[in-house]
Amino acid sequence: MQSSPSLTELAKSILEDSQAIDSFLSSHNLPQPSFASDGIKDFPVGTEHADIHAIRHRLIDATRELRDLVICPKDTIKWMIMNDHTLAASVHAISHFKIAQAVPKEGLISFAELARATGVAELDVARFVRRTAINHIFVEPTPGHVAHTAASALLSEDPQMQALVAHMSEEAFPASARIVDALEVSTGCGEPRDSPFALAFGTSFFERKVEQPETMHRFGLAMSSWSEGDGTRQMRDCYDWASLPGGGKVVDIGGALGHISLGIAEKFEGLEFVVEDQPPLTEQARSLISSYPETISNRVKFLPHDFFQPQPAEARAADAYIMRYILHDWSDTYAKKILNNVFEAMKEDSRLIIADAVMPPAGVLPKCQEEVLRSFDVSMLAQLNSQERTLEMWKRLIEESGGGRWNITDILSPPKGESITILEVKST
Image (tube, rainbow, N blue to C red; front, side, top):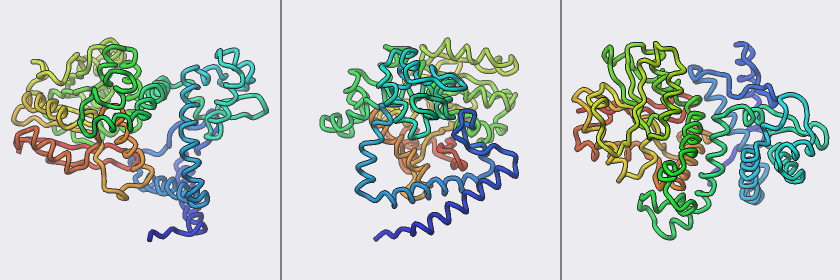
């Protein structure tokens, strides 16, 4: 039988870890977390301070464990099944009707004024704001009046966060509601057209992106919101790009707008990059690339390409290929087709850099990190009929796709605060 620490033991550990983080922030002149509208939007400690991130994760897990113990199982299930989806629905409404954008950056606005500004009934504006305010999204400092918190200000001002919320609310959320329906019809087939997403929208995820380019634009922005936190910095700093030859070419397969390549190019001046993704992203990607100084933008090129097709001439025999968060979008059947095209284009000394989730055994990671990975796994099923993979699954996929010629030669585990493992694949 699993034993639990006492409430007092948990509270003591929470106090000690809180004091450790508080002391670190103070000694390094870093801002304290705050719900205030001008509060920090992200944890202010860099990933180089692994010990502080370990304490942070331990603190998050302990506070949740204390809460769950006090709530007890019956209320835990009741509150979770009732509260989680109503919070998601309220955030969806706030996103869709741009309620956060209608709240002034400073000061207050009444529910009546907010209703007039958004075209939403005052009763509904109040219910959505008050529901999310419990989770520190908005605050009602005086009855009937709304002000921003740090979280609602983020929803108001950050285009990438706005895109992420809109995508999850308007596509991932409806798809998740059809998981059971899809599994009743077809279990484990891995076909995108049989996905819960296809049941919800009548077309597969990426077919919808072609049919409705605005959703692809939004999806690109949404993925960039993840990359700022655990993508660009990790890809730039955690892999030995200096080991590539001077003037080396790197192909970023499915690279969205090119944010990863631009980040690496900024630090490693000798490398050139080809960013590949679907044609609807061309204008947006080229606009982003051209916004960088010429010393960077001249070395980064966007190339419209479908990775189910053979690599084009300008992307063949590159020194390195990047696939960040690509293969988890596809079942093994389709992932092998993608990899076959990449391996066919690689030269003997090319390397493939896969940055993706590697599912750990249960209990290895802090629960707050494991929860994100488990959620990704369910989301992959809902939206794409795909999956996250364990290390053994990755090894098997690479070996089978490359005919035994290509294998994983190095594994760079994610630093504290990150969720993506970097797998280096070379000819062996």
